[in-house]
Structures are given as C-alpha cells and as structure tokens.
Length: 400
Image 1: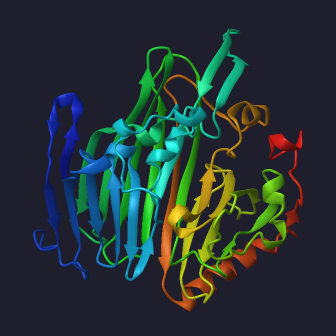
Image 2 (image 1 turned 45 degrees about the vertical axis):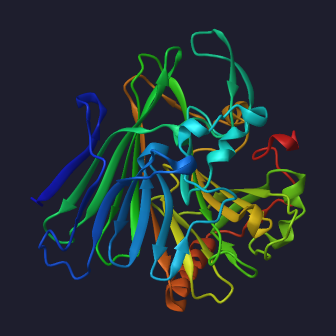
C-alpha cells in the first residue's frame, strides 16, 4: 500500500482555513530526482484581493490553482513555455467583482482570464431564457447567464497530498458547491495530480447530485492558450469523424479550420464543433502546436465521459485577448434548450454522480509533436473526415 502525507488547507464545515502553506522536496526527504514545491498564499490588491492561490511546481511543469474561482487553473509553465493567455484585465478576479448578469448575461467574461476554467455545472453556453417542462410535468422558465456559475464559486474544502513512495505523486483536491433553494444541488470534487519531472497534469472530476430529485448537468472545459503556442502558422489537430462551424461567421473560416493567423485587430470569434474518432476504449486526443512544429500541448480524454469537443478561435489583437480555446465537454456551447433537444444534457438521478479523468501534457521538442501527430493520423485512418462547410442541424441551432 502506498503511503501519503496529507494537509487540509480549507474546511468550511469545521471552520478551518490556512492563509499560507508550503512544502516541497527540501522539506520532505523523499529522494525525488527533481526539486519540487507546493505553496498556498492569499493574493492582495486590486480585483484579485482575497483570492486563494495554490502553486504547484514539479521541477519542470508548474501551474497555479484558484480554489476561490471554482478550482480553475490560472496559468502554467513548462520549462520556458508559458501556458495560458493574456486577458485584457489584471486578474485573477475575485468572484465578488463579477456580476454575471451584466451586459445581457455575459458578465462572466469580466472574470475570465484563466488557462483552464470550467463552464457549468447546471448549464453552460450563451445566456437566455430556458423554457421547458421538467420531469414532474411542471413548466419552468430559467434565466441562464453565460457559461453558468461554477467558475465563480469558491471551494469549501481543499487538501493537498504528497506520495511518500515512487512515483511521489503531488495532488491538490478541492470541493466546490453549486446550489441553493429551488436550485439544483451539485458538488464538484476535482483533483489535479502530477509527478515530479513530468510534462503532464491529470485532472479527475466527480460531480454529485446531492438533491432529492434528478437534475441536469453540463460541463465544458475551457482550456485557453495564447502566445507562444498560439501564433501565425500554429495548428490544431484532432482525429475528425465530423466537424461543423457553429454559425455563419465560423463557416467563413472553414478552409483554414486547422490553422491560425497572427493577431488581427477586430477579428470576430469563430467556433467549431467536433465529433472525434477514438480507440476501442473511447480514448482520443487533440493537439495545438506552433508553426515550427517543435512545441505543443496535448489534451487526452475519453469520449465515453466527454463526447463533445469544441475549438474557439479568438485571434484578435493581443491587447484585446489573442487566444484560442480547445474544449472537451459533455455538450457543445449552444444554448441549453438546443443541447437538451439533441440529447446532450446529462441527467443525474438523486444521489448519483458523473466523473471524468483527462490530462494535459506539454512538449518542447519536435519529437514529441511528431509522435503525437502519428497517434492522430493512426486514429484518423479509421474514417475520412466529414467537414461540413456550413452549420449542420446536429451541431448548431443556427442551422435550423
């Protein structure tokens, strides 16, 4: 049996919270081949004042976790490769400074500057009024804001764990509650795990319905990248079964689906919905790599857990947010009622759960990029990609 050392940093139920914490290879004599560290602190000043930040450094890969913002990843670094993007704000932004109902329900964007953020849990996608009949036959009208609530909910429980035996795993776990009276009661338990010297972080998410009635759930992982991985000549590649632009604007860029231009002031975002090919166990992947084909980031996930994949291109001026999103999900980022009609909204019975395990890995050499491309080509050999030049009714409400 493997041994672990565990520390609790936040436990609201037991009224416990630590403002500052640190540990690492200099304190735990484990014989790890790489120097590693883990530190927790509270940010002060500006819009970020009061945000808890946990910084994990495994010796070559580092990342910062935001328990105050739904356990998002603020940014990362792999050797000399920055992971994340430059948002037009000085973040991270404390949830108390975000009014999600602003600007017709898109106020969520005023807090959006993370490398990885979750969209959900009761809903994601654009804002609007969701009119439907629930399972008890009751007529419901819910006003939904952009991408839901979870990204602006603070964790009520946080712990860190370090393996005392090889491979000396470093894990951070947080629990985030999304609920309220006459509202679905969902709890996200997420764990980030890495190994000293690894180019990889593994994400395990568990979403539980703690209510007494069935409830709907959606989750989309908004993994956002800017320079240096994103630039003129960068490419995003996946094993495609089928792909469709989400609207007429995205259709304008279908001939350059895989490639990116440099920053273009005034660029209007484009979104593409993918149905990916996978192996016999459901595993698939997607990669964004640079124009030199010697740096890339790879997402690996299972379509049985995350059946939908979206690419968001927002290559405007750097000052305005030069960024792309590569996004595994349970659904596509359409309005919830459309996704419900397509059978892409998860229903969780009382006391049941949904879970997924996926990973992010970073490569800083041509061999890593080439090997990943070979994996994608192998999966693509199963079928010729179907590329819809215009929005398809299966993927887009604008096609109806």
